[in-house]
Image (cartoon, rainbow, N blue to C red; front, side):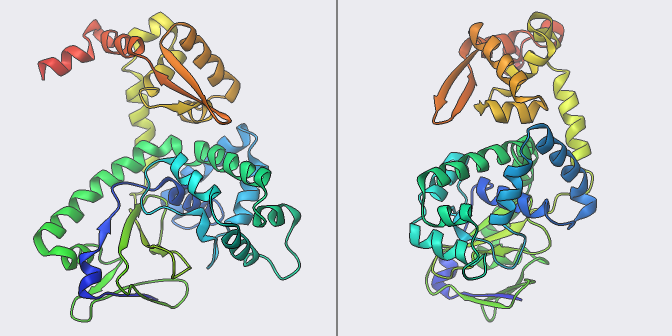
Length: 348
């Protein structure tokens, strides 16, 4: 059982993260790939992601990450350093900036004394190359396990957030905490929040703010950091309904039907790429979202860039693609039926 003890001051400092935290989603997705929890809800996602991992040649990478991030009572806190950060690169930068003493302490807890593998030993010692490989592994795994489902994650958060806002506006912090039932049991008289947990843990906040982070891939019970000295975070399940992936696939098919006008000009696959590049993406993310090989996604991005529809910029080892103003204009003026999205907006 998890027991979080509040004072009046703690309640005043309570906050809800503005959106999903990419590092928490990635870590929890890695856990789901190691177990069969919530099988009805997540088994279709597991099958899809495992196939994507195989296509991308990421089997060894994901296996190494699961050793670093096991589905167990303890996994390293440094992998989830944010308090509701909404940007993946910010989260990865925080991970790679972990002090060496913290890396060594937490990675050592994963292995029996004197039996730490060589790769883990390099990482625990803060080796720059090992950290660089970790950052790239996190990016590439996120691109196949989390990024393709970003719209579903954001939609779940967007549905959950007004519920919490109404509760907080109506009854303050106590009302907000009560709104998380039955997953969390708020006892207003004793200012105690209880939740099922794999180990028994008491968490007095002692004046430190608590951030509640909604998480799509969190199942069964909330999650907290192991180290009581770190900023306090409570990750709670968004609990998507069974069949969410099938509904998402249907929505993507419907979205694909929005681009036949552009498809007649540049081809259906490139039209789909131009459509999703409304948001900046790496080549790996583009490949994952469109279910393409990395080389095919790169080729589409190159053709779109040469046509002036997409701009590409190297950031470290990744290349970020984003739609240009010309690309926006093409998508606005060439949807089905020849009536532009811009005209639709102006008419509305």
